[in-house]
Length: 271
Image 1 (cartoon, helix red, strand yellow):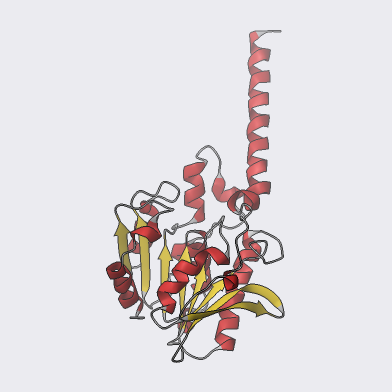
Image 2 (tube, one colour):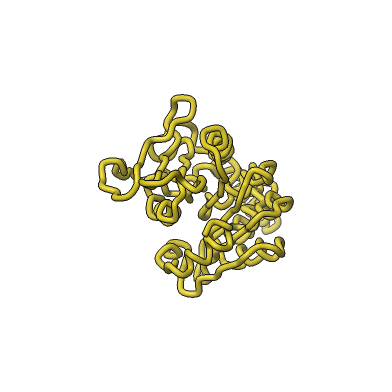
């Protein structure tokens, strides 16, 4: 075989491998972005002084938990959207921050996660996230805030779009500016903008929102580098940016001291 034919054969093989990899990224992106979640205990089986935890149902189907403070009527409702490789049960510590401040907290669950049945896809997660707001508005009076972490920040941002007037405040924790930009950093050899089913552009989704917007970024984050949070904040001059210099993507909550949470609540208009 001539050198020319060897080179051409090598090029064809390389092209085939590249196209196969690109096809895998396109077809398997939901599985890659939404891995299975580990099983955890039902939080209702554990003591939680000062609050009540109930299963939340939408049209008769499990959709997460409602955590309500004991005592006076809640000051409003906070919806929490969790990250990937998590379930609603894992967000009780985050929910408690707002419960202890006097708020009812809805911890939304995505289909295919935790104890919720359904397809584990970004499309299904987004539909469930929007439904969580609609059902919250229909179920209780008072103001509503959104809080999302990582993947949940992307969901919360998209829920903002079209519901700007219904929200009292929003907090996005370790967020991306766009999912496409995160994917481009992880897979620079591929045209990820065209491979993604949805770019999940949080900048565009929150562009029309004029209420309180708080963004929390971890400066040691290697999964979603803090530059994403900074770009998102820069795109919204009225937003508030809190940077955690000692935290990474998984340790941000440990870095949130009581004074930092009080600052976040003030910025959200929920102090």
